[in-house]
Length: 122
Image (cartoon, rainbow, N blue to C red; front, side, top):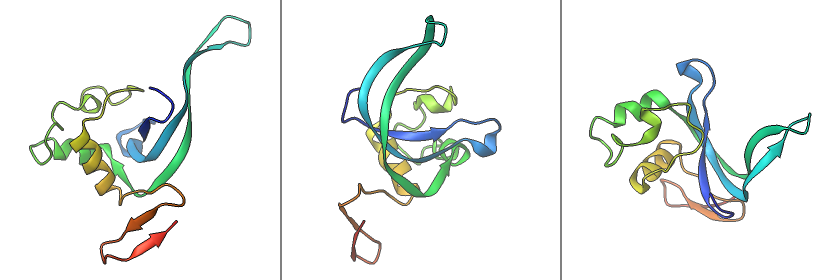
């Protein structure tokens, strides 16, 4: 993950009902090690900034249903095998489908084309 990369923001909380993609973030600082309070290893981190929240969260259950052949590459999507994995590649057609199911997103200041073909400034 490098600065400028866009990522799906996924809630992986306890219970199937809380697992869902809720928006898009952008990497602002690549991987670095975080020191713990005692000076030891505290873990690893990547800094991100919010780009845009989806109009509708996309539940993991809906993503699993789409793996039945509706979306090319969905069957191989790592999230379906490891739903709590932090970082994984997202195939382009899967990315597009998830963003569409979420109602789309635009970065502040960009224009979005609505279903009625009107432009909306955010």
